[in-house]
Image 1 (tube, helix red, strand yellow):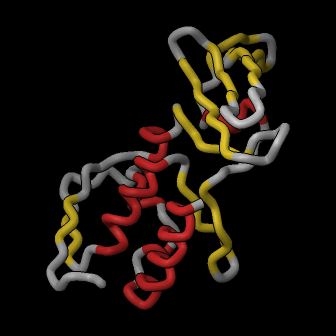
Image 2 (cartoon, helix red, strand yellow; image 1 turned 45 degrees about the vertical axis):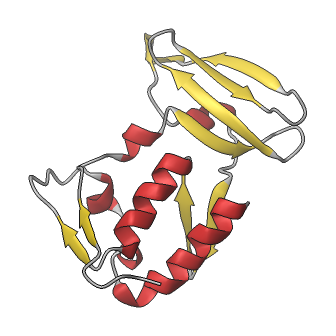
Length: 150
């Protein structure tokens, strides 16, 4: 049930604020695993508590002879599928982790959405239109609840 005048104040978070720890499907057993990236040590790790799968990679990459620290979402280093994703209409609703899912839920549930100091780079500004439309609210909340139970 959605409360009237449920207020959301945009924190101007970006998708990159959630990308260092990403819940994924284990590439060995298919259960929930965690891909994490530490950009300071230039390492990424995929670990599954279910089967014990454990792999580490470097986050450095060489492009056109130049080496640098590739700062991307942790699951991309392993080509791992997101754990928190579900089809919605002709697209996919996804979240990187529980913190990201809760942030999206707070936004979607809100009947009053306050934005300040927008930069055109925030997570909410980059979301597809269907996230913002009130007509999709109930369906998206059902998806979020299913993903939380997964």
